[in-house]
Image (cartoon, rainbow, N blue to C red; front, side, top):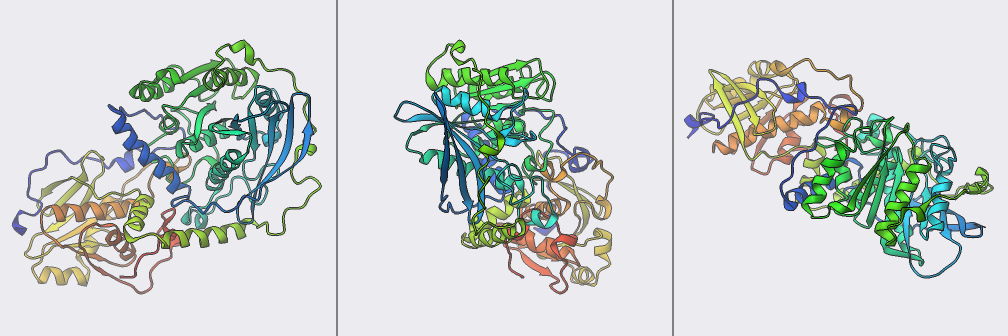
Length: 568
């Protein structure tokens, strides 16, 4: 049986170069939409995307929805609308500020719209030609909606953290601005849904720029959003320019266009401008997303408009959104009914939640929020059963147990690849008898061959596979790392190394040469330890346990510290 190891003919060729070195994606990479033939195929992918978004945001499993302790106060009354201040406790000791716009008259259940803002100077309170949060909220209220405008982190009343904060230690725990903003959006939706004057079956979202990112992320992970209008953000050629839009792992093998398509078949309007990265939307992004709506037979639920303008959410863009919502939500297809009227802008200080008030006594600092985030996240993960924890760990590494592994052998040299993935794992294969030993050394296969442990395997006559896992030994290769937000679009080197070990174990297992013994030498011992934890088959682990390196120094995978593994 061992004589057949790695000798079966490959059904496809191993690529000449590892795609993980030659195709490095970034926020300005030109993406394309994959083809999906059926609703079932798309729905399966959509489920994976939802999981990926939540894992990258540190929201898998979801945090406990603790009481919001909503404070709605200081009503400003006008002839046809009212404005109130809102404070929500979205996590214990973490507060979100906003303003609630309501029609002044009438009764009964109303549709509602969440309006997250983008990176304008005054956030939700911006009132300029390019964006007016007040005009948006007031106009929606005049049209019969309840509208809730709320802050990005680090803006206006939501100042317990910086806006674009990032540290490697935060990333190890999946803690960052995107995580807090997406959770705040989910809790803002909880709040609006709880209002007695809101129809919970008619809640939508609209936002522009960074607010557009928040809009389609929320709609993608929460089906309670029934209609949406992401403005000047859905693009194949730019995926977001701020840390608050680029959590590690968020767009590995995907783009904002696919994420926005998750809204299908719910009504959505794509608003674009000729003067920014949405300039191609009518010709490229819109048809791509329309192909998903067509799978459901609901192409009429997707709209597109484009204006001759720079990056914006200006009056013309807002009026297009009002008309689209009017048709699909209010049942009024007459666009002229949704022309924006002039507004009386409120002084900014009169709209601030904490103006004249202090933050509650339990309000936390950024570092205190991080400490509570770690405690609560670890507790939720430890409550999972073993299978769910392994699935979460696999998602954290963006790894898989490959169904098919291609192998090519030339003398002592072997190269492996996952079918259809474009990766390349090189190594040395030394034939023998008995269970195979798979050995990983941080300096590659030739360094492993000289190690006393490997020399013992060879003297015992066992088959030995020495790996050059990603960017080690013979697998070290030059690559262009100049693009922005590398970890948002690409697995880290350490995560790729875990995948390469899994690929090798899957290949050995397919050849019935197991259970394999997996040996990690030096700092590679932590790689092999995680690979064993992920492998769904029996693996005997031989790994050094003394003086293991720290995560920050030599083993960097965002989210990894959420999921402890056994020492052996």
